Image (cartoon, rainbow, N blue to C red; front, side, top):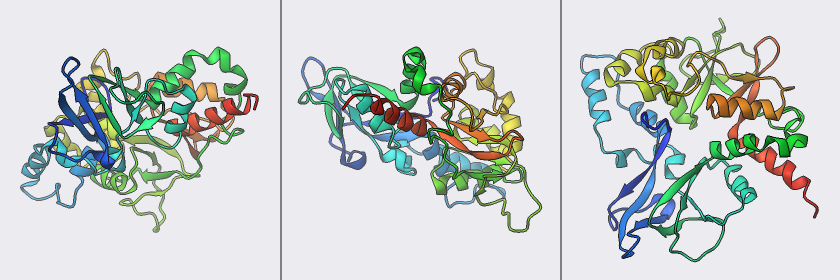
Length: 328
């Protein structure tokens, strides 16, 4: 994941030994003989890894927390599949599937799908749970946004509209406070199946629990804690950072080698990627693609959280607007 700057990878196993995620039967076979070589059994995501780290066992505090974390990081990858629902979602998209149909799939919260290069199955379009091919490519929500960005000139009448006007802003946004520890943040994300959470300025309210997610709307945005932040962590560093606050972590992770790499994502962990309700859809797409983030926080002019626009939200509203312009 670090080497390829990705947040999820498909997991392959020898055929005949595993049940595929969601009952899927996605096989990779020899191009010449047709013999099945691999069975894709699920996805391993950064959220799965976080959920595994933040399991029921206590991994901070005590003398043996380092060895506990060592044990957690040495398990086979097959054992972490399913910690998040996304890890159990393994889909294929036929190469003949139209772009609008791809948008429909990804507008429902599916983040990625395998595309067979030379399908051995019946030549139909759409989403499948059964597939056999000699090789696959991965199509993601971000790929769709890059395509939309590259073809912005043909979509000017749509993407010039504001995200607030077209209903792209989700105002149900949950956050962690600036006092929340990394390990507590991970457990919150695991429970809520969130890949990232905004960090908001802690208040003096007795009702605000730093160990729980809080309603973020109307609170001052000061940071982001994301599952992808942990990609650059060496085990020794992770053991040191778990007791820190998530805000301190996002500052410490700046020194991680991954962020100094020439092919690293074009964003520092401390940079906030935000927009306003009045911002155009084009601006939000550009920020998501350029900064390679999967959600853009929506704030008011004073920097207080209004909501968020996710890639799913963008794809959903874009598809609806495109369809509304096609003559029936």
